[in-house]
Structures are given as C-alpha cells and as structure tokens.
Length: 354
Image (tube, rainbow, N blue to C red; front, side):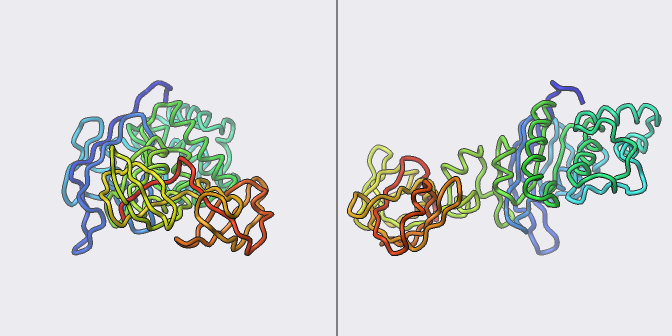
C-alpha cells in the first residue's frame, strides 16, 4: 500500500446478531471514520468479535445495514467487501515460504505469481521483514509471524484492516513493541483499522477511539482520554484501568458544579447531569494524595504499602471504604497502621452513573 491513501469509512446502522434465542450483538449504530484506528474493547462474551466478523462478512447481520466506503455491503460475502483480517492464530501455511504466504491471496485471485511476489516483497518491507521471504513460518519468532500475517493482509490493499486479538499469543514486552508498530503502520498508510482486544492498556496505546462493549451492546465510545478521564459508568471506569469506586452524596448542584460529601470531606466536581442525592464516583489511584495525619481530607490508616521502583502503591482504610493509591516512592516508607490523611487531586475524580 502507498502512504497517503485514506481508508474507507465503516458505518453500522441498527446492526444486530442473534443465534436463535441468544442475542450476540444488540441493535447498535457505529461510525468508524476513514483512516482511523478504532478498538472494540470488552470482556469475553460481550459481542466484540461477533461485531468484527459482521464487518468482515464472516457473519451475516440478523438485522441492520453495514456500509463500507459509502456502499451497502450487508449482503456481500467476505470476498466481495475488500477487507482483510488478521487472526489471533496468524493462520500461516506452515509448508509455504513467507513470500508465498504473503502472496497467497493475490495468486488465488488470479494474479500472476511473479507480480504477486513483487507486491509481497513490498508488503514484507513495509512491516520490516525485507529479506525474510525465503524462510518458513517455523523459522520465525512469534512477533515475526505476526508481521507476516499483517503483510499478507496489507498486500491485498484493503479498504479496511481488521485485527482480532492479534497480540494475545506474544509475551508482554513483545506485545508492547508490536502494538507500537501496528499503530505507526496504520498512521503512515492512512488505514482504517478495527481492532479487537480485551486488554485496556493495548486499547489506550493504539486507538483514535475506543468502543467499550458490555452485554452485547456499547457501554461507551470515545477517545482514550475521554474514557479514562471521564468514564460514564462504574463499569467503564473499572474496565479502563484501576479505579476506586466510592459512594457519596451530592448535597447541591449549581452552575454545573456538584458539591459532594464523602464522610466529613466536601469536594466539588462537574455534576454530569446528576441530581442531588446518593451518588457514585470513581477516583483513579494516582488522583489520591496521601498526607500526614491531621491534615485536610479524609482520615485514613495505611493497611499496606509496597515499593514498586518507579512509584509506590498503598491500600488505605478510610471512613468511605478501602482505597488503592499510587504515589511517590516515599509512600512505601509509611508503616502499616500509621495514620494519614487523604485528599483528592483535580483530575481523575468523576461522578458516574451506577
């Protein structure tokens, strides 16, 4: 593929999938802008892979319409949609060379082998595997096999590139480098990518937008920063990383600002449309600040504190429940049972729906 090409928009209108009495995906609307990377994120069984397979044409939607590049492809087969998919297992042919694996789709569609191999060589160079074409898949590392699978998808010059849990077979360090490579490749080539994962760190690292799915529907969609800093529910907040779920009371709302009572502490937060009364809020561990006993804030007691090298982690007992805190390394020097006070930073504390 050539840099500068902008991928196609994907638009889902009222798309749903049922297997008999079981609803795998509830009717939903979703727009994936051309040239962006959108991640479908959620726990196992939430419907994200089924939704990806409906975009690919590997599953037929029970209702609704699928548009790719403005064309209605709802009734088209996978081969008629000009999309490519990278599977979790890579699905490489073990008896074929890397070059033949990458060229396979072109050759099977009738292209001359010589021309197909030229395009395959270019695709391998794009993913950093120039000169690897003569090897067998068994002679490559897991990360290299993953790149071959990406090259095989890219060589078809798809309107949309689909990834189904592509990094789950790699170790943690390799996952980090490969997700950076996928993101760089997507941006360089202007691809439209739909990416499925259950790993929130992976989603945060690669995405323009994240669609968090739960119970066969969309829980919330937004940019990584929006979902992390302003989750709409307790589920989204806790799925997008560590979060303390606290119960408080909104005492009053004025000019979009809610005064929230947490035991004897009062804090002001954007009201997010919530009325006075009992309320849920979430606080990221890094938004909580541990100070000396007797200071402003909630009184607390250190249950345990752990030195983590670049930072410290602590569990603190408070009148509103146990909370998890990430702070500077000095926090680890506080002994279990020692009295502290707990205050809240200006970011990472939000009111949410239950």
